[in-house]
Length: 486
Ligand code: NAD
Image 1: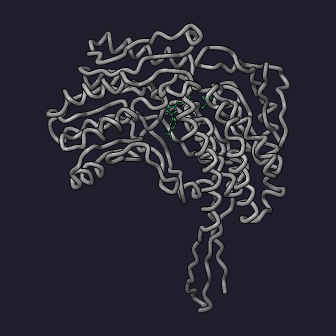
Image 2 (image 1 turned 90 degrees about the vertical axis):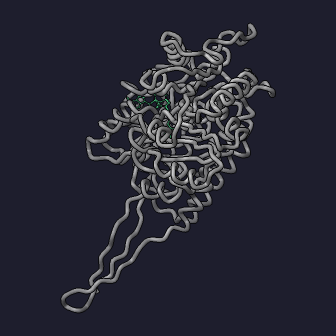
Image 3 (image 1 turned 90 degrees about the horizontal axis):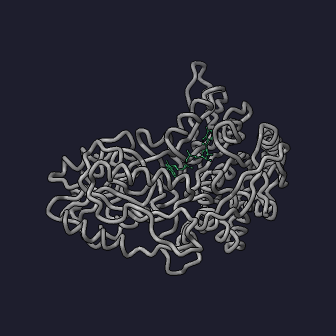
């Protein structure tokens, strides 16, 4: 059986405790690898290596040299594209057709885009008068923040981890990454690419394990980590923020959402159906930006529901290697239990189940997988847990509305504020409504369209801070003002 080890100071090492946990293929329930679980000793070693690398060659390297190395990391991922694809799909169960377009190319792009960006960032300078008339010059320089703890989730493992590691390294920091226990493989594989690309030992470190009382908690409690960047659930974000408060360490938190889609009667219905289908069911609904609440203007409500139902029922459920499949399993049986508990709640509360609501029949070789049906409900009250809590599964609730003001109020009614999608062909309305939605990202007539230079993050309980483009540089560097009396 394959073993997945930590990557510390440029080498793969096992846990001193000998503790291993299972890595399971969610498409069939089979154990595909044994993963070493980090204890305090491995986390200490990783942080120590990261601190030493900061003081070593990485810290002294020119931006141009660092950029060249990070380009080689991106090229290394691309050169081993099939290996990364296979690993990501085995860990997550997602269709290869999806991961080959999004997860792996974006994983590589995250190194190039941020390396190129840092090369072109200007700082500021101010001349000032002084009472003695000689004056002073202020100028700022950017310095790496130090050792960054990166804690990532399982839904887009390589993409979301490199989205933080790429800019962190581009800015000259070193990292200790704790990937999700569900999806350790591509983070581990990236260690080989780092070595091949000439990244000095200790710059990129990985410790595997769980959250509480395991690698995640040891990392967030470690006094020698300077800042934490985290993607995951809002509740976990709160725990990490509390841990980071000790020693006043900064946090960047990309958290959960319960995103609203608003479909006006003046929309292009084909586009709205296509976009809402993707936003509700892509990656089996396990996308933080996905739409789980859909508000549809009453005149087109029935037609919208009927067409979304037809679209959901046309999805092809299958395992990653099935070239016809566009809908995979959930990431784990544990997560399936959570999603199915909401399917049950919806039924208990008397929802109209438009489609789905259960577990699909799968062929014998996939029967052990974490499968659920794509599901659409109508008829639930606005305060139902199904409508207010993040399910993170392939499901949405559709509710009619009558006025623009009502739609905005509904969209803004929850403590989350990650993303929203508005569907209308009326340009004035699009701008007017987008301006009033309480969310970090609002799409108009699209979904999941992202330019890595733009600010990304959540409002309200969906996060703290923004990453992307120069905003990542703000988080991963410390701006120092130098004032010189002339
Ligand atoms: P999660 O919060 O359960 O776990 C995320 C990571 O945190 C994992 O590596 C986990 O091991 C670690 N962790 C858990 N408890 C910890 C603790 N006490 N201390 C330190 N680390 C701990 O989230 P998940 O289930 O892996 O991912 C799904 C969630 O992520 C959803 O809520 C989704 O909305 C969110 N998400 C948000 C974004 C975004 O950009 N805002 C993107 C993707 C996913």
